[in-house]
Length: 218
Length: 251
Image (cartoon, rainbow over all chains, first blue to last red; front, side, top):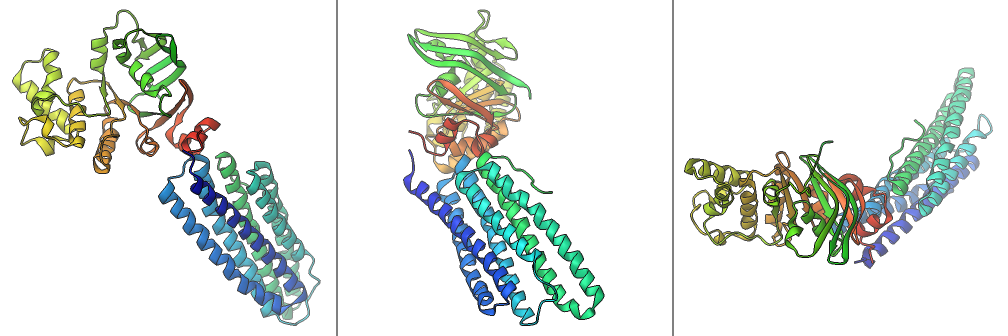
């Protein structure tokens, strides 16, 4: 009664989701590197590589829809596929934000920073940690690890508010700071959104593992 | 939740072989309860304990209770024939009698003493309407029932059950001999019927259980492994054995 090709396909889907997680993790890491060093080449590569993530998203989505139509999955398999469809979208969005940050790098160009970047790299690190913890939780169907991942979003939100206040001061002091401050604020906003999508991913991993739908970090 | 029926600590034996072990299962009123599980798990045996159909098999023994409206149907003062009038049954193979459509439906009421032609006619019409068959047969009520298609025959059998005005209907794989369109009609009918009747259905088709039932119970080796709302059983069952069975990881 066991259906080998179906279970092989589920395994393949799982590996693709993990690959997606890796690509997003790399994109976030490269985006902050590009921003810190104002490296246009790195930024342009991230924007190009985002297409890989988009393509993978479509593949996963199509495959999951076929599985539902052809295999009528139930219980843990159904939760697995439902979760794949949902976190697939969240991961793809996170990739988009990394690409958006790269576009900001291109817009800022070579002009010197109005202040040293400290909080933005911290936001990037936390985002990457959320992705990694989520992927670990995903592989092991680990509810506790998913909760740990989502908990990091509080810190990201806190950093975003701090950056907002700091940049407001810079803009108020000297209107010539407005242009770059706005770009940096947008970058911070993108990291903040990455954190929110990562939280969604944690919630869906908990659903996959236990069947319960929880709302983390209201 | 109002229980129409409830099995309590029910054991069942064929001679020395125990087929059911301590079954505790509620059957909610005006709902569809599905029984699923692999062949030989006891689901059909259990179904037949609910209207004492097993009584007709020799050397069987029931221990425990089946309460219907809080009265044990195995009490000595319960007449099994009266019980089966209240708890009708539909089988896997449609089994119309080799007589006319009209007489098939009127058979039960006549046995129970209804002679009035007008009353019989009304019963036949309302039963066929409830079984979603009236429009297809109203112009040939006096033709043989054997001329109907398999799907129509199954609905005819359901109409025959309805004609004796039961409170519950037990169905033992009622769609397994039907084509997809007849199956879909039958499923639609089951959903309609639950407004007026309490239904328990045995099915091998898990998608069917998922589509039509409100509650699902999973049987394995004569034991009730899990009972819950259908939605929960098919998305997040509690028991690993249930999960393994419905995801095809069984055996």
